[in-house]
Image (cartoon, rainbow, N blue to C red; front, side, top):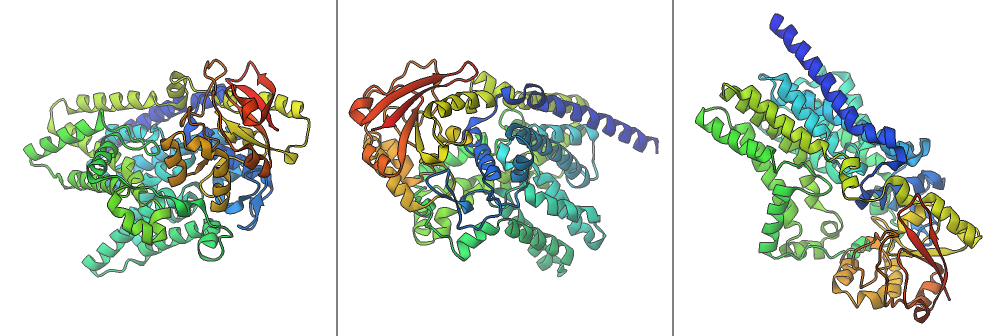
Length: 563
C-alpha cells in the first residue's frame, strides 16, 4: 500500500516538474510574442500564410472549384486546408501569432501526456518506473516538431494508447477515448501520418483476427470510424480526386525519384541516423547509443529483447521505404500509376519519432534493472537528452541562426509603406518577388503571380515558366528543381540559386537578370519586389520606383515597375 502511495506521489511530483519545463520551453512565445524567432522553411514561408489567407478569404466552406483571386490570378480553393481543419479556425479566431502559440501549446502537452500514458499503460505496463515514463514523455514533448503538423506526430502516442486500449478492452474501454479519437482528426493530418498509422492498426487488427479467430468489432470500428472522419474532414481532396478536380494539378508532372542504388542506400542511412527535417527525433547522440548498449545488456542478462528488436526493425523498414521511394527502380510504378507519382508513400517514416522514444523508454528500463547504479545512469541519460532538446526551442535555435523574427519576417509596416506609395487598390495590380519569398507579400494582402503551394494548375505553371525560362537555362539545378517538382513557383534567378533570403545588410546585387517581361506583363504583372538591387533593370524592361526600409524589419525592398 505504502509503496503505491509513494509511487503516486513521486509520479505526480515528476509530472508537475515536467509541465514546468514544458512551460519554460513555451515561454518565449508568450513573453516575446511576434518578436520570437521561429522556423522559416515550410512555416513562415508557407503554412502560416495559407491559414491566414483562407481565414480572411470568406471562402472557408466554398466549393472546391472556387478560386482565391489573391494568388496566381485564382488559386483553386482545394489547394488549401479543409474548412474542418481546427488550425484554420485558430486563425479565424485569433491573430496569426496567437494562433501559432496556441497550436504549439496544445501540441506539446498532448505529446507529453500521450507518451506518458502510452508508456505507463502499455510499453512498461508491468515495470512502470515514474522517472522513465515521465522523463521520456518530457523528451518527446520537446521534439522540434514541424509546427503545421500539429498532432500529426505529437498526437501519435495518445492515438496508439487509445487503439491499444480499445483492442484490449473492447466495449469496456472508456467512452472518452472515442471522443479523443474524434477530436484528434481535426488537429492532425491524414495524408502526413495517420493514413500510415491507421493502415498499421488495420494490419494489427487483421493479424489478431487470423490468430485468435475473433473479429473484435470495437477495434475495427475505431479504425474505420477514425478513417471515415478523416475522409469527411478532407472532403475537398476526395471531391477533386474522384468527382471533379476542376484542373490538372502541377503534381501530375512531378518527376521525383532518380537515385541509383548506392544513392538510395546513402539516403536510407542518412534518414535512419539523422531523420528528416519534418520529423526530427534527435536520437543519434543519446538515444541510439543507449538502445544499442541496452540490447547487449539484455542479451547478457537474458532479458526479453523482443520489444526492443521489433521496434528497431520497424524503424529500419520505415527508413528503407522512405529511401526506396526515391529509387530510380520505382519509376516504373510512378510513370504508369498516377497515385505513386503524386502521393509520397515514403512519409511512413514520419512514424519513427514514436518508435525511437518507445525504444528509449525500454532501453532505460533495462539499464535501470540491470545495474546497481542504474537509476543514476537513467537520470543522466534523460537529463542529457532533455538539455539537447530544450536547445531546439525555436527561439534559441533560430536566434542562433540569426533568422528573422515573426515580426521582422512579415514586415507589415514596411509593406504598408509600399502600399501607400503605390496608392491603388491591391486587387488592381499584381506583384512578383525576387530574392524573397512571395508569401511575405501575400501575408500583407498583396496579389501575387508567384507562390508556394502544394497544388495549383499545371497550365499556370507552364505559363509562369515562360517568364523565368531564360534564368532557368543559366542554372541546371534550378531548372531541374522547377521542372521536376515546382511547388515553389518563384521568380528564380540563376546567379542566386535557391537562396530566397537577403537582409538589408547584404552587399549582393543581381548583375544580370534575364526574364521575359512581355510574358510577365501579359499575365498581369505590374510590379517586382526585389530583396536585392537589380543592376541591369533598364535592359530587362523595368523602371526603378523606390527602395523601402524600416527599422523593425530585416529587409530592404526595391520596387520596380514593368515597362
